[in-house]
Amino acid sequence: MKCALIALAVLAALPAHAQFRKPEDAVKYRQSVMYVMGTSFYTRLGAMVKDRTPFDAKVAQEHADVVVAMSKLPWITFTPDTNGMGRTDAKPVIWQELPKFRDLADKMQAEVLKLQAAARTGDLEAVKGAWRAADKACVACHDAYTNQ
Image (tube, rainbow, N blue to C red; front, side):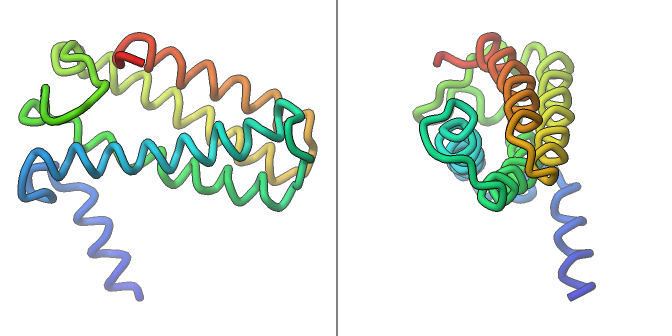
């Protein structure tokens, strides 16, 4: 198990071109990660936060955990060789503003960690506040760097 974790950590540190055979594979990977993260964040947690479904503290915690895990994964795939690759909502300006883009990604990751902590309390009001802050962080990046 320890060897598997070390191998995973080493892979996470490698550039995207070393992890994916083709740029198209990197794009598919990041889109899949974003889909899972968005489903847990907007569909599952968002429904509870917006009182569309009953609050379930256990489910909220599970989905906050998914969001945190997924929030770490897509950034290595934003490499110049993926610019304009396939069907993507990513604006080409991402590759001209990578430091700003990564700063927004870091801010989102910090906010979803707060969401995870709030979900662990089981307090719906805490989850609502943390969810809204994380949503603002997501929207800031999407407004600047996607065609959505």
